[in-house]
Length: 234
DNA sequence: GCATTAACCACAG
DNA sequence: CTGTGGTTAATGC
Image: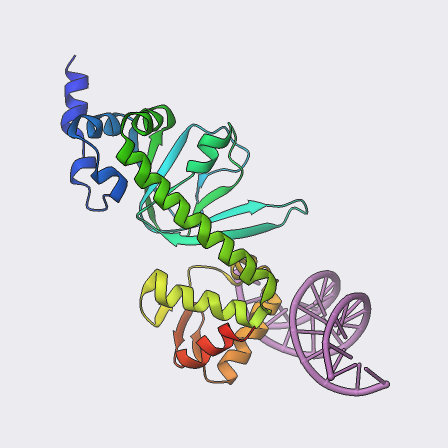
């Protein structure tokens, strides 16, 4: 019987440095429930955290690391729907919508993920209204983001949308103007809905215009104002 | 018509 | 995995 007690002792959710807003409103008892339902796993770049078309058993809290959410479409082509970094929940919509994952989540850098058993998670949703509200808030935010992103993608020309992606990496992901692009050219193309060849060509045009400097995976934005302008003017 | 945008293809580091 | 160049199709003056 020491097992259960040990489990409780080992519970780290309470002291997690990446604790999310929803989890911060849980009671001690509920935190224990969360811990029992959670297993921490580390993923290397390229490894799938959630696999499209697989049985949906848990939702995932990305503790740290950069990941992509991607879906294989009807013509066997992968489209990257979102790139983001922890801390963040992923996979919640699938878990509540059906039994099967409709998209994959893969690590782009080393990623620490907390795999949370769906039953346990659902118990918390049903038990704690404040927790549910916070989860609903984060889900709403990402949904609105997706709407905006979708319209951008359709209306903007490629150069503008690629500029968007650069600004997304500098301002949101890395919060600095020089960074190491976690996507290959092919993935970058999948991210903005184009081919790797087009990415190469546009990137070169931006280098020519002295808007960015590129050294392999290393990218440095040197004229953000102009980049912003390109992003705005379709 | 002519120019621009971007996909597709093939070949080469 | 990337870069390059040629070709092709669609769209817009």
